[in-house]
Amino acid sequence: MPNASKTSLWPDPLVEWAATSLVNVEDPTRWFTELAEKIFAAGLPLARFRIHYDILHPQYAGMSTRWRRGDPRVEITRATHEFLEGDCYAASPVYLLDEGTVPEIRRSLEVADRELDFPVVKELKAEGLTDYLALPLRLANGRTGAASFATDRAGGFTTDEIERLRQVTRAAARGFEIVIRHETSRSLARAYLGHRTGDRVLAGAVRRGDGETIDAVIWFSDLRRSTALSAEMSAGDFLALLNQYFDCLAGAVQEQGGEILRFIGDAVLAIFPADPGGDSGWAEACARAVRATRLAEANVERLNGERASNGRDPIAYGIGLHLGSVHYGNIGTAERVEFTVVGAAANAAAKIANQCKLAGEKVLISEQIARRLEEPWRDLGEFDLPGVGRPMRLFGLS
Image (cartoon, rainbow, N blue to C red; front, side, top):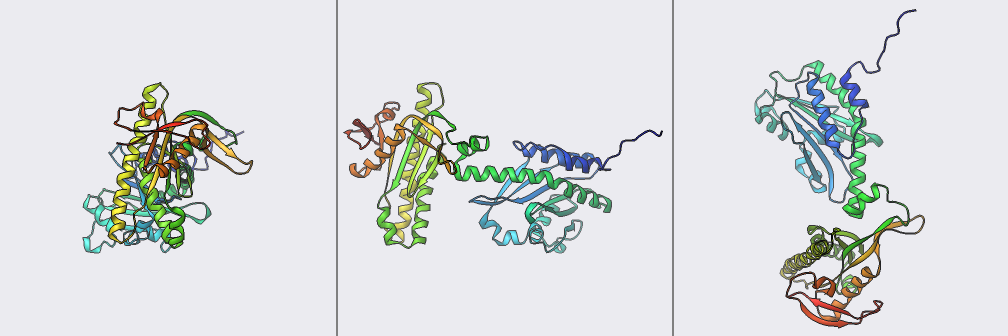
């Protein structure tokens, strides 16, 4: 009986690796780097490798990842929706591949600049590269990405090398699909839930009741005269104003490391988690929250200056800050849940924010925060806040 010999469905080990290797979605650039290095190690004269793909995100429409031979860094670039709607993208090879108007694009860079029709290939030639190949990356549901390769070898890629790159690209589509799906899931979760909360949900905290008790500074803010403004303005203009207002206040929260949990109409609920470790963790969380209020004030002053130059009235707001232990987790119905914070401290922060209007203050903070920071606070006295159950001493910023 003849000896059985092992046969492979993948006669090319490089193509086999691209098609079957495991992808660590927590470190996708590692797989991308390994693929690039294996292409080079297999004898292909690769100097530059880049992939482009679409993502779902409120701000960004696409991403690209670039590897360069001899550079340990992997460059990740995000393209805004506006960029993909502009002339620069329309003048790129990736645009033609996305539109499906050409099956692939190859340009020799060993020609005069006037013969090069894409800005990117002119840039690559200036960097000393000699050949450029862009291939479509066929993904699920009819979506298309792109993979581009460049070499600095005199004479460029051979015909056999180009065919091998085609095979590798087709085989690697499976791995890139995994990376893209994970990146899309993560970007959507972070955009709609926040970084901390989105990552917790993706890690498996999805059941109603899942959560934990955390210590945090709670931020609650809202827009003054929002009902009147919505009646005075068109729906489109009011929505634009809300987005500008959220950029000012919620943007300040994010810049200082806070986590936005909810937009409730014109209100913002956010937290600044306190690291375990006693007073030092509380002091840092309080300091970040107070810095965010000052940044928000500067942002609104700038916005109101722009509004004044256009003959529009200024906007006003109120921010309430309190601290305490809250339940941070999933609540809702069996079919519809949201990740938020609940507890007496969160309720008090909302009541403090509402008191801003009555006290004529932009920002009010609780005594529990004031005593943890060395600031020249203005002691405004005690207030009976509805639903809190006890008088609260509140302070204003200096």
